Length: 155
Image (cartoon, rainbow, N blue to C red; front, side):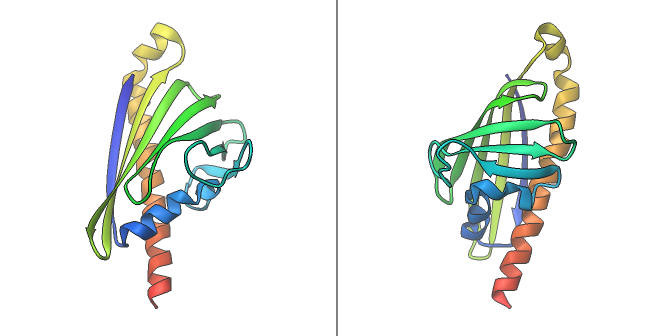
């Protein structure tokens, strides 16, 4: 499997940062490439076993994800178990760190296996560049969303 890792400091407490990701159905609120996201299965809103689908702006691409690791304010692990993107399977780990009372850090690690056999393996460097850009956009969108929420609540 191939790994892409990105991180970002956020001007908000770790609890506020965590809450944005724990609102599992609503990642579309800050993910710049998503058209919509919604719960699947028994519609469990969060925690181990919760399922969601993310539909991208292109109107074609989707990901189905399951929470397989859940430590509030510390770590969230998602299994991308079904998709029509060029990945066979992926694990996405979000690590949350408290810097101080009003600052935190998110680190996102995307561990993926490409589709298409040998061709997919040959495309890994290109895929890593694309995923790096997309993941930075995602955590950047999240940081902006969280910081605006935190500032509005503090005002």
